[in-house]
Length: 215
Ligand SMILES: [Zn+2]
Image 1 (tube, rainbow, N blue to C red):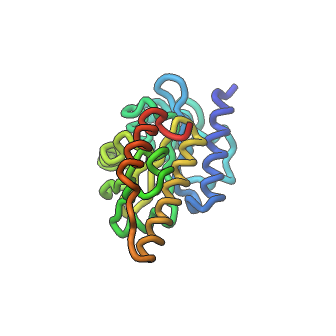
Image 2: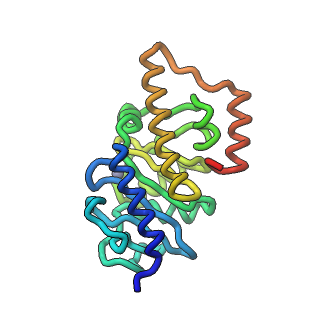
Image 3: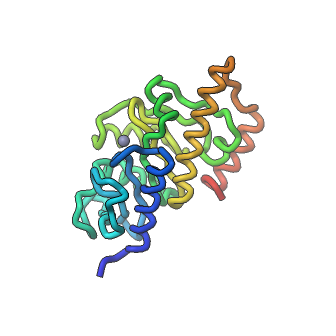
């Protein structure tokens, strides 16, 4: 009897939702959920999400070895594991390629604190981690350091990482990054980006430090 089927089903549903909402294309992106102990459920490498069943979502340990499921785990497993090791508050990790955040990642732009929900739920600016090859330990190190205690980070010439205490909140973080990217790009075209009022920013960051994301 396969274990963690309910959790694996939720990982698959989240991956399908990413594709439906245009946050990834085809087989790209990956989604994971922290299970008990040093275990996580993660999407398998290079598969179309609509062709997978919950049993195809792999359960791996912190060595990236399969515990449940036959398929090879996502090529970004190291990155997901590194985040769980460094951020005890994180219960779910999403790596996606949203188009507008992708444009910023290509232009080499970080998103300063421009929206109040960005401050309250993402924890401030969305920084730009330098490019490193997908799946490499260098990418994991770079993401960890640029993510810090916040809930999202851009990866240069690649995409984004969004985290949360559960899948729903990590997914919301993903959408918040794309919404902030849209506002940043449009405001730039409209004559300039105005950052959030510093006092409001401090208050909202205080709220974030208390709750670590969407309540
Ligand atoms: Zn990617």
